[in-house]
Image (cartoon, rainbow, N blue to C red):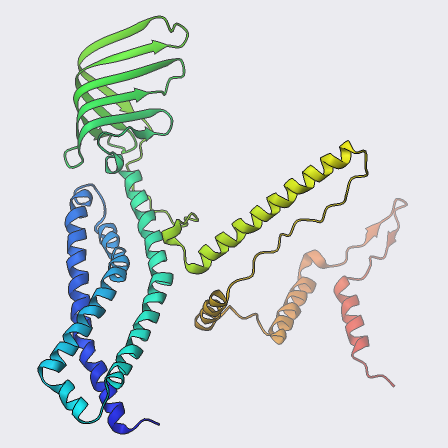
Length: 393
């Protein structure tokens, strides 16, 4: 058991690290969050998005900011604490009292281990979930506003497989375009290329269609039935309606797709194990096919192949540990007790006996004579149960 002086010294050193750690973590996280807000705030405000959605976007950005600022905050806290202890001659006093440097570093190493475990839990459990929710939310916002995902000097797909747009300059705030090139593939009988010096985007009142107002351009058109003829039309103002562009914000509830930054360690291990299992299965199937072909050429009987192994790969030790912790925190719903199930079954049988549809109705034969109806099933089962409950002689 450690001496009381040593325990007090350990608590003192750890306590000296806590304030600078908290200050550094809060300051660095706030600075990076303000930088993130300054970059993205103009893309969200004034676009018809609810304020709760904008706040959710920046709130979901905090976990990956904390994942970067926590190691920096630990470095700042360690440097500040030991510099402060050395400036106040506390390190000299401890060494004069016979306390070694290893003893001074022992509580710091223990605290670093705790911070490393917290960082592992944060990066493995919280960060992938927040990245998944943030990516899904940004995709929903881009689906609401196509101008969010339009990029300059790139052919952008506005309508899948039908309408493509390229612009040298795009202003999402004013919805203006410069040096526009449009590839219209919506009509299977013809192909059109629309060029314009400038343009402007606007939505219909319903918010489902997009209007493009193009100025000072030309239209190149070629018909598939007559590819030898080329039509070239000049215009001053050309208005194009692009149907099927949604401008209503619909938040996705359940998105099963996850990227590598949205999966936990156990999920990535499961993907790798299943990929290896599929590779082994393909190798065996290829070997079996080659063997069967060779036996067929040699006029031998076909060999029987073993069925493929479809058992899921076993989880690793870390995944079993995480699963046990999850079961302790959120236990599975318990089944009702046997006596409660029996009482529910009795009530159900009682209701079925008292209902008019279960009463015995005399059945008539072809000769007009009534034959007795069979006894209800509930009476037979009650008779059997009572006969079983009698004590044996």
